[in-house]
Amino acid sequence: MISRLRLRKLGLLGKRTTIALGGVGISLGVSLGLGLVGGSIARSQAPPIFENITLNPGFRPDPQSLRGISGGEISARVTANRIETATGPCVGFIDRQPDHVLTLTEFFDYLSMEVESPEDTTLLVIGPGGTWCNDDLQGKDPAIIGRWLAGNYQIWVGSYERNKFHPYVLRLSETRATR
Ligand SMILES: [Ca+2]
Image 1 (tube, rainbow, N blue to C red):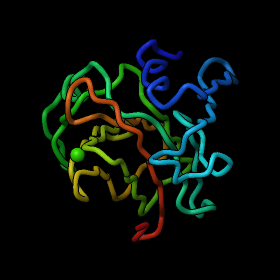
Image 2: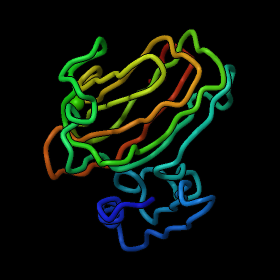
Image 3: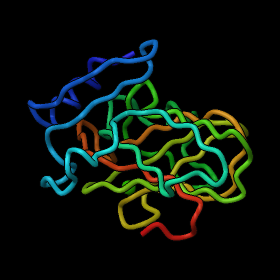
Image 4: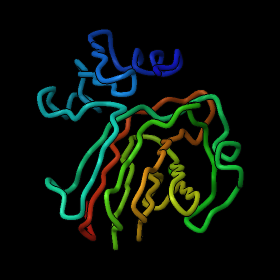
C-alpha cells in the first residue's frame, strides 16, 4: 500500500530513513534519521510517519501527534469532489491514498485536527457525514475543529503548490488550545 510517490517523498527526508512494514500492508512505521526541521525533534521522540490512529474520548497523551510529508499529484478538489466545504476551500495537491486514517470509537463533542508545517499545507478529511477541507486556519497551517461523529476518517495533508513536499506534524487534541 506504499505508493512510489510516497517512497519518493520519504526519500526527501534523508538517506538514513528506514522503513519497517507491519500489519497487512497498511501500517507503515518509519523512523527517520533526521528531525522534522533542523533536527529539533530527537529521533527517539519522533512519532511514526504516515501512521493511522484510533482515539477514544479522554485519550492520553493529549495531543496525539502523527507525522508525514504533504503533497501529491492529485488536486484536492478532485478527491473532495467539491471546491469548498463548510470548514474551508479544497485546495492543494495530495497523494492518491490518504496519509492517515483516524478511527473515532465514539462521538467527540470537541476535537481539533491541526497541521503544523514549515510551508503552506492544506487538509482534506472524508468521513462519516461529509467532507471537510481547510487551507490557512492558523497562518499557512490548516486545521479542522469541531464535533466529530464516530467512525473512520480518511485524512490527506496537501501542499498548496504542485510538486512541493513538506514535512508536517498532525495534532489531534480534545483541549481547546494546543499551541
Ligand atoms: Ca495552507
